[in-house]
Length: 162
Image (cartoon, rainbow, N blue to C red; front, side):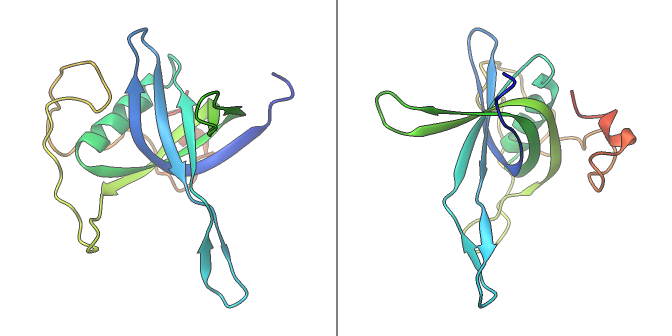
């Protein structure tokens, strides 16, 4: 593992897949962009990552599930070891991250296509989970961590990371 590259991404968690063996994967997407010579932003191809769950990531994954079930968009920062796997049958490339650090940077109600904020969805469980536990309310509780202004400060690292 010494030769695997370490990367850091900021993207949006859009699903948590839970498996019968107790494992979990957080699906994260990000769209890189650059500024053209005329000052306009140009989006590149959206990248998708599977963030492998560990016993230390479960609390963060549960919070992401709560925000998603409330109809919110969840921005995350993930630092970890990066691997790429080419699919055998479909020819796709799968990006995988084995996280060393993961943070929830923020969450907010999703916007619909007209630019208006969508109403939060009412659900009876967690997205991607086999558990049948109802959520406490449509609006999840705020995380009990420091502010995301300085994610590398000691106060923040004592909170929502593993």
